[in-house]
Image 1: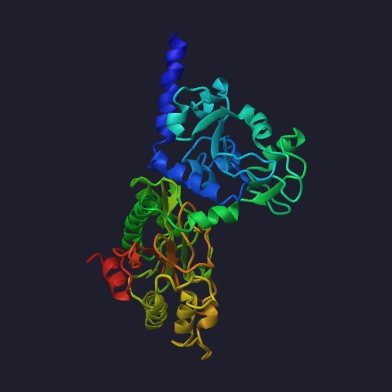
Image 2 (image 1 turned 60 degrees about the vertical axis):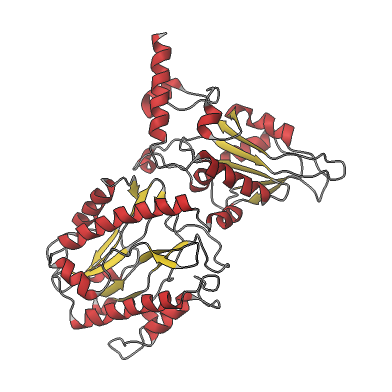
Length: 451
C-alpha cells in the first residue's frame, strides 16, 4: 500500500514538473486539433513525439517536438496523436465524425526511477490532464487504425498526414510507421502525405497566448543583452559573455537558449553563424551578439553590435548607421496585408532594406555595399527560432517575425547586424517587442559607459 501511495505521489509530482512550463489552456490545443482536422480533406493525421533523449542529444534534457507540442501541449516522450477528420457519406463510405486520440506508452516503473514518473494511459485523470478527447495505450494504436481506416478503391485511397521524411532523412514517425506498415495497420494503397506544410500554415498566425510567451522570452533575452553590453571591455572573452547571457535569461525562467549563442568579436563578427565563442575581445574591434532564450518552448531572436572599447570608430559608426537605416526603412515600408518577408516579391521588406544598403555607402574599393548583405531580412519566430510559416501570404495580425539587416566586410573586420522582434497586432500595427533595448550608436555608447 505504501508503494502504491509513493508511486501516486511521484506521478503527480512528475506531472506538475512536466507542466511547469507556462502551458496554454487545454482548450487552445483542442481548437488547433480541430483546425487541423478541417484541413485534412477527409484524411487522418498521425504524429509522434520523440523518444526519451539520451546521449549527446540530452544536453538540455528532453524537449518535445514543436509540432507535437503545438497540437497537444504534451511534454512527455513516446506518445502518438491521431486526428480523424469528419466526413460526409460518400458512395459506400459512411459518414464519420471528428475523432482525436492520444496514445501514451504504458508506464515503465524501472525506467521511471531514472527519468521520473510519467502519466500512464490507464490513469483515470488522463483525459482531464491532457485535454484530448480519448486517451489509449500506445499498444492499441495498430488496432485503432484498423478500426478507423476505411479500405477505399483508388483514387479515393485513405490519406495519412504525418511527418514524412525526405530521402535520406529520418523523422519521429519513421520507425513507428515502418512497424505499423509491417503490421498491416493501413489499407493497401494508403497515401502518405507530409503534414508539415499543413501545420506550418496553422503556425503562421499566433494566438494571443503564444505572443505573450514570445514576449516573455524576449523580455528575458533583453535583460541578458543589457547585462552583456555593460560587461564588454577589452580582454573580455566571447565565452564569458555567452555564459553571462545564459545565466541572465535562465534566472528569468528560460529553459534553454533558443539557438546556439553567437558572440563574435573582430573578424568573428563577420561570420554569420559563428558559434565557437572562443576568442577574446580586442580594443578597436566590434562585438556582434546574436543570442536569446527560450521561454516555455517559445523562442526569441535578438542581435546587437557593440564597439569593444565603448566607442565606435568613424567607419564602424558609418556602417552601423547604414544597417540601422535599412531596418528603419523596412519598418516604415510595412503595410499589414500587403508586405511580404520573401525577397523578390511585391511588397518585399527585404528588397527595401537591400536597396537602402546598396545606395548608402561604399566599400574600400568604392563598390556598393549590397553584396555584403548576404542573408535574408526576416523569418518567423515561435516554437522554433526559425518557425515554419507560409511565406507566400502577406504579413498580417498574429504574425511574429524578425527584421535583421546586416553588413559583413571581412577585409575591414566589420560585421554589423541589428535584429529586433516584431509582431502585427489585431489592428494591423507593427509592434516592436524589443522596444526597450537600445538601438542607436549613441544609445549603445551611453549604455557601455554605464551612464
